[in-house]
Image (cartoon, rainbow, N blue to C red; front, side, top):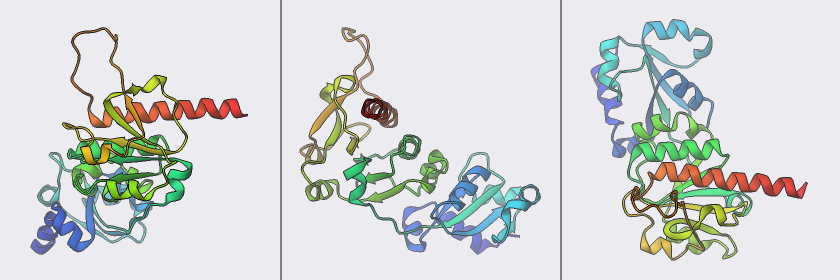
Length: 261
């Protein structure tokens, strides 16, 4: 049986200040827990129902597992319909490397507030082989339970750090391109996209902040169709826009590689 203090501790990790204090975060669901355990995260403790333990006996191995009832799981879960397993993972120290944007793409997110958007963007980076995501300090915490859930295990394969974006761009070589999604940018499908550099995604409501936009070297926009249509949506969801842009970068990169062969 899980103790009252354990329940209190687990529920405290739903808040950023306690995740930072204890260097620990929550993950729920069999697939998610397994994927994160294979990444750079130290698995501290598993809480699960007895049925789940029996089904996962070959996988659990030496991990510390505490069996809980369904009603106890409901008291610690972050989900409307609790999963049969919840795990505590330690937050690792992560760093970014200039070699990445010198030779590959990096996603940069400026003040993304919606947890679902950030989680999906992390997953998009994973899908398109973009090794790191750099977030402004005001971006939602990457270990927010909703972000972790939306990323669906991609935290295990993507390096993600928080840094003042203006400071980052001041420190990089001017030859490194910074691509920013803006309404007054060049048509994405008519632009020549490099194999390396930064892809900058702005806030859901306000776009890229004015201070950060001064560092953009290539303004891009995703055109609506048909081009002469009078009525259309005001903007795209930030994660949807990130997916479209990353796909076009990889398509152009693949074509370029074929021409070089």
